[in-house]
Image (tube, rainbow, N blue to C red):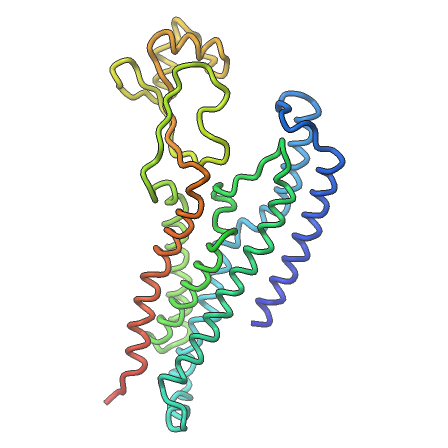
Length: 309
């Protein structure tokens, strides 16, 4: 607990220094909010903000994987496994404290501390991101780089990993095997859910039939994009480029190419989730994590409380 608290304090100090520097730079150098990226002033501002957020962002990028794994392995797994391995539970259970009270004191107290730690992490990351979210530079919290570092995600991941570690310790009754299983399951869960938020709900669909700057609303979570012809047949960007190479050329970044493609009956389609679904997806992933973890934890608690004959 002391190590975790110290690491959060160090991280908070790093984010504070970085955020204050970004806020000071934005206050002195931010151009007009409607500037375009190809102007020197706007390009320089975006480039500097990208560099500032990248320096600390690379460190934060490892936390959604490493923090839950460490919480599960070093907080959860030894909690019961060490008691069973060393036999100290037998002494505890001969005292006036009941098994149920002994177990509740361990799980509830540390579980609350773990949840609070995850909320603290989100609480220090959110203002740091807000320091960079100064137009024309925008921070998309729906981006997978930040999605699991803000809101309730850190708390959900930390608590589910803690319960998983506790359950592994109760079932295996050996500390090292319980830690190994916890680390493996945390890694599988992270990589299994890495790109899953886009599938948490049916995406919205927008069809572009005329030249516009942005097809998807700002802050949306992109799912996929493709082209369709008059009959509704889907084409990838490469397939559409080959089909239109003769009449329209190959530079699909220009408005002239877009107008030409639309005149030949092609339409660009984008599927996305609006930023308003952010909290819906946060609670969805929290449920995906916590429901199985708590169910497994319940099995482990029942096994622990059941007297052995």
